[in-house]
Image (cartoon, rainbow, N blue to C red):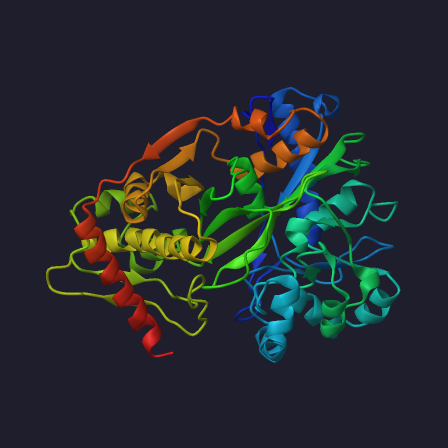
Length: 478
């Protein structure tokens, strides 16, 4: 994506990145294919805007976090498919790490989980022949996707730089969250060769110039996708919260320059790090199923033909008819973090229609958001003033109104919906002086839509009790 000085998207080019599912619980991507696709879409985006590389002041990278790649330094070839954040093959290893959970949490702020990159890296070293021996000598390199792309953009085998930014590094189980560098204790615990690790850098600084794709253009930012969305939403003050709604959802709260320890299932992480300033931290609450629950209604139940039809169907009724859907299809994420929980529908009676079920499906996303936000209020001690939203599901007005109703705060969607990419552009532009400061970025923010709470407090309490009862039932057999 190409953005101008006003934060407006000038052009976009995209290709689908395929995923494969070779075994139950395994989710992989082809890292080489990703690099090939980048070489196609960047020139296309420039051509669509009528621009050349000389018109680009800086390049920023935002990436899917935790996805793990190892490759040969000499050839530039990945040694195996990239293992994505959804992959659960490392479950047995994570169980073994449980006895070290307190130590890991003290250093990294995280609890051991298949969600993070380090167990996947250890699995690759254990299962790819010769990988560990070569890694000991720095001949095999590790990175998440921004590391892989920046290495290739800056020359690959011919001098590519090997770096990762602090937001991505904070999602590995290997970063000392206070020192913002790799922890020798964690590297020893997981037996990861330090020689294969990228150098940790800030989120907004000139790392190098592109040798390929955009020759001469400085690469000036890198952020994990959810932190980049927080930045793109200009959530720069403590208490600012954003939620990105896609197949799942990710709620992040800016908590300022002090770490708020993990509690109530929330994940402390680095939000961003700017030159000469203290790093800004965040609390994160991931939600496993939001948009994918709507897709399930379409693909498995046949309730609707297209995803947008869920709103039309839900509007045929005034409430959920006492029906609640807890979408624990593969467990529940924040704030419960229970992989054994399973999905449940409660309150079914002969009165309930498919309209009630459709409404309960949408309300499940709102109530899951409320569970995470309530945990954030308690843990951070900060009252939410508004929720900034982005992602495909924000086009559903009924859902966004229900989010505002159950949170009892305004919900705001910005004019530029691609906040992940905008955040990377903002951070890169700051690094090269294209924008002066954070205030100039705030001036670019324009509201496309907003929803204010209108639910009667008594009804909110009653429906909240119904939702919590359904969640307890989903957890009851665990």
